[in-house]
Image 1 (cartoon, rainbow, N blue to C red):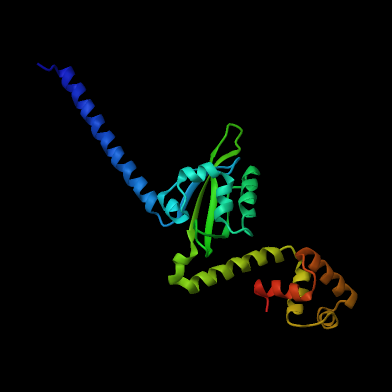
Image 2 (cartoon, rainbow, N blue to C red; image 1 turned 90 degrees about the vertical axis):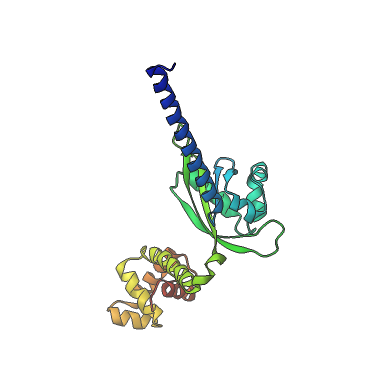
Length: 234
């Protein structure tokens, strides 16, 4: 005959078993979601740039199993990234060694055995840190931009907007006077005409324009005007 104590233990055991089954169900659902997210999700050891986990979608898209990715280490990224973009993998690795909070952008990628390249947009952030606070693991998410073919206009505008912001950040290095001169230069005015409008000497305008080129790291007026127009100067 069961005592009240025995019955209490049985109730507790049953409750624990139900909680365990509920947790298993939740974990299985989360794993299923991660594997079906239409994005390449993975984590890697930053010090050796080696994938230590990825979702099934990434395996399908790259043509590599997670074990193969791990065994290849940095070479995996060399295999799937465009040669001109591969340096980004090393730059990202170094950025997290310098404790950057995020690294993102675009790169070209192709599946194992494929000939054509596709464009990916991705971002990486620190996932775990060691006892010294340095980044140990990084978690990354990449999306194939061809999946956004239903929103071509928005995609093009987004890229233009990013370029505008980058050029605006670049132009923020200029003083207000230098910006005034640049705006007039974009309109096609020469140094003499700009000097007359701003009531400055031609030599002063020439000096300002030289400083502008140095700050923006451009070689000539054509490159200077191109950057200004991309930033919205007309």
